[in-house]
Amino acid sequence: DKTELFENLGAEFFQLLGGVSIARSRRHIRKYYSDVIDEYGDFPTQLPPENCHPSTDLSGELSYNELANQIGDFALSIYRPSTYVDSEEAKQRLADEKARLRFNQEDRERFLIGMMQTNFLKRLESSAHSLSVTLERTIKKHDDMLEKIEKFEKNSNIKDATADVLPDDDEDDEEFLINRAKNPYHLKELDCVRWKQDIIKDKQTLTEAWDKVKSITPDRDGKLKEIKKHIKDKVDAPSEDKDGNPNRKLLIFTTFKDTAEYLYNNLSEFTEKLNLKMAMVSGDMTRTTIGQNNFNDILTNFAPKARNRADGEDNNINIVIATDCISEGQNLQDCDTVLNYDIHWNPVRIIQRFGRIDRIGSNNLAVRMINYWPTEDMEVYLRLRNRVESRMALADATASGDDDPLNEWTYEEAQMTFNNQDNFRDKQLEDIRKGDFDLDDLPDNVVMSDFTLDYFYAQLQKYIEKNKTKLEATPDGAYAVTDYPDKPDEKGVIFFLRLQNASDNKQQRTASPIHPYYAVYIRNNEDIRYGSMNAKQVLDLFEAATENKTEAINDLCLKFDQETEFGEKMDDYNNLLDTVISDIKRSHTTVQTKSMGRGGSRDFKLPIASEAPKESSDFKLVTWLVIT
Image (cartoon, rainbow, N blue to C red; front, side, top):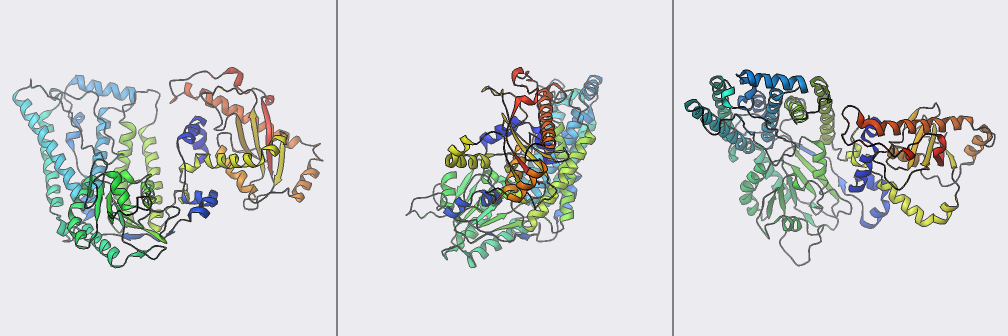
C-alpha cells in the first residue's frame, strides 16, 4: 500500500530525497516537460524486446536446470561451523544469543549458505566461465581450511586456529553482502573430526560440479555462439538513424566482471575480422582495441555525439561490454541496442540499463533490448531463482548483527515478506519480458517520482514569476469547484493549510513533507483519503482534477452556492475541515513520538512546544478545492 508506506517513511525522508535526487522517467518527462521535448525531440520508439534462450552447453551434456538444482543442494559445511560446536561454553553463547535476539550465529550461517547458493546461481546464469571461477575459489577455501584443521590436529597451539572463513565476496554484485562472525570459533570448540569429514565430502561435490562446468569451453558455449550471431546481424543488417546512417553500435551488459572479461577475450578476434572496435568497462578495469584505455575516453568514443566529443577524432568504438557500473547516469544514446547477456535479478536494474540509450532527443528512430534468459520456461526459472533468493534476503535482514532487543521481526514474518517480494519481482520480470520498460508503468511499483516534488516546485516557480502580483492580491481561503469525470467516486475536498506559528527553525520531524504547509484530501464521508504525509498524491489528484480548466465552471459554482446558501450554510465543509485538522494533529503527535517506541531511532528530541499544533486556530486555510 503506497499510501501507508509514505505515511510511515516520515516527512524528513521526502525532504532529504527531494534535495538530492531528480526523478525523470519517460512518462514523467512526456507529461511534464513537453517544452523540453519540443526543443530537443522526443524519445525514440521502443521496439518489442527480443527474448533469447541460448543453450548453456551446445553438446547437450549439461543443462541450466541440472546445474541449478545441483547448486541448490550444496551443503557448504565450511560456512556453518556452529553446527559442529562441541564445547559447553560455545553452546551457551549460542543459546544466550538466541534468547536475547531470537537469532544466533547458527541462524546467520544457515542463511549465509543461501547467499552463497544465490551467488553460484547468478554466476551460472551469467556464464559457465563465471561459475567456474567462483567454484575454483570456493574449493581453494576448502583446501585451506582442511590444511588448517590438519595442522591443529598435530599441534593445538598453532597461531591461527579460528574457524572463520570469509565467503567469496563478489565486488561486482552489490547485493551480495557478507556478514562475518563477530566472535569466530576456536577449532578446539568444534568437533573437528566430523567437520573435516563433511568439508571433504563437500569439496568432492564442488569439484565434481567444477569439472562439469569448466568442460564448457568457448566452443561449447551456447551463449557465446548466440552473441556472435547478434553481432554479425548488427553488421550485415544495421538499423538506420533519422539521417539514414547505419548504426552498428551494441551495448552489452553483464552482472559480473569475470563474464565481461571472458566475452572481451573471446570476441576480440571475431569483432576484428568484422572491422568492429570493441571495449570493456567494469568497476576497476577497462580494456579497448582503439583509443585511450580509460573509462571516460571509452564511453566518449562509444557515444561521441551524446558526450559532445570534438569533431575530427576517429576512435569510434562499436561495441562496449559493461558491468552495471554504467547502468545509471550515463548518456550513450548514439547506440540503439542493449543486449542483456544475463538478466539482473533486480528488474529495476534492467530498465536502468535500457535507459542508457532510451533518451530524449535521440537521433535513433527506435531502440531495442535483447535479453538472454537462462531457460525458456519462465516458471522453472522463477522457481529455481526464488528457491535461493529468499534465503539471501533473509540472510541480509537477519545476519546484520542488529543487537536491538526491541526488534521483533520473526523468522515467519520475514519469510512471508520476502515471499511477497519474490512474487512482486516475478511480475516485474514478466512485464519487462513483454516490453514494459518504464518504471512508472510497472503495476504497484514504487518509483522515485512517487517521492519527489521537483516537478511541482518547478511549475510553482514558473507560475509565481508570471503571476506574482495576482497571487499577492489573492486572499487566503480562496476556493474553486470542479468535477472529476474520470474518477466519479473521488468526491471530496482538498485543503491546503499553513501552520501559523511555524518558525524558521526546522523541526526535526514534521507531519508534512512541505511543512509548514499541509495538504490533505478528505472525502465527503469524512474519510481521509490522503493525509498530510501524502502531499505528492494530493498534488497529483489536484492536478488531474483541474487539468485544462482555467476558468470557473459556472454550473458547478451555482450548484455549490445553492447547497451552501451562498456561503451561509457551511457546516458540512467546516466539519470536513475540523476532521482534517484533527488528523494533522494526530499525525504530528505520531511522528514526533514514534522514536520513543519499538524500532525507533535513538536520537529522539522533544519537539518545539510552541510549534506543536493544539487548536484549529493554529492553522490558516490557504486555499481549498471542492471536487463534486
